Amino acid sequence: MIAGERHNASSGRASVPYELESLRRGTDLRLDGKRAATIELASAATGVKLRQLEVVALHDGHIHRITLSAERGRYAADRDAFLAVLDTWRWR
Image 1 (tube, rainbow, N blue to C red):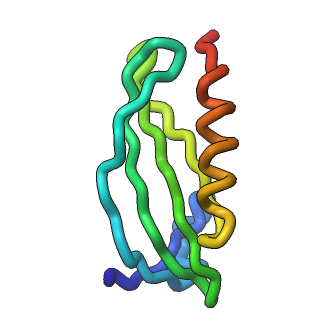
Image 2: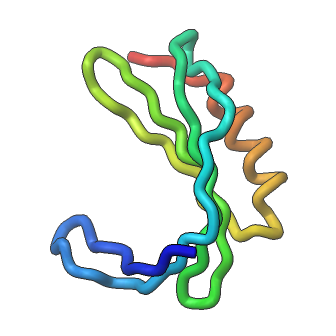
């Protein structure tokens, strides 16, 4: 388990303590025909246990990150809905 603090992107200051419980590379998927990597993690912050699915894609020279964060009890259903949205993804 890794413990640390989340950082506020605008101020750069630590805001919420968290514990990273697991981190693993997930199954690659496609966004509008382009390969995207996934990372799955489990964490806890202020007593709330979360699971996250991070999708990382390179498009037109830019890195894009799309993230699902859900309470652990809702993760499976929310992940299915998230993946359904990603199936409709179109780059503009």
